[in-house]
Amino acid sequence: MRARNVALLLTAALVVYLVLLAERAVQLFATGTPAGIALGVGVFLLPLLGVWIVVVTWRSGLQIQRLSRRLDAEGGLPDVSDLPRRPSGRVDRAAADAWFDQRRAEVEANQDDWRAWYRLAYAYDIAGDRRRARATMRKAVDLEAADR
Image 1 (spheres, rainbow, N blue to C red):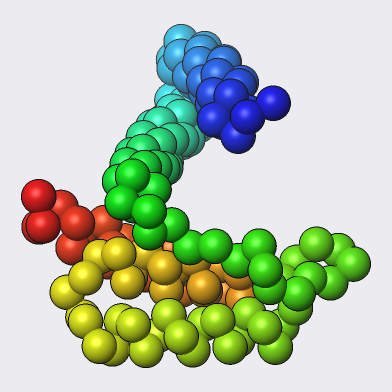
Image 2: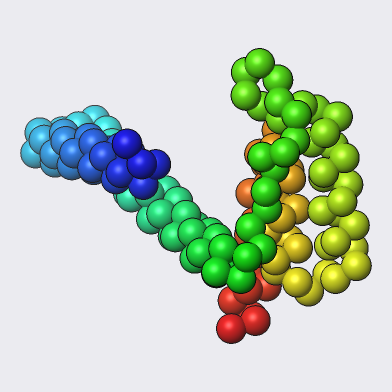
């Protein structure tokens, strides 16, 4: 099953859950008691927060997918298939660090190139630093949007 199909399936399940949660909030409002109304407000905030998170996550994913397709069309997608791997399938740490250093040098040489930032984000990801990978990918998305 493709990753996008899994994401759609999980999003649909989350939407069902959020609808059920909102329904529970309405039931709490209907009690008419101060405690029920207060709990209803709190419970109703959860689906609102959930919707916001889903929208932001899907928007980010679609932007990254657009960059990936554009980079693929240009023949510039990062290729780590030749890097040595551990038995778990992850890229060997020393090889990931060396590959990362190359990508960082690319960014330092051209700070305004979204392609270099995309590859650096990928390097952070294979090195296991997801937080920096996300931040770096946001920078790539911003630079690409300014480039269009």
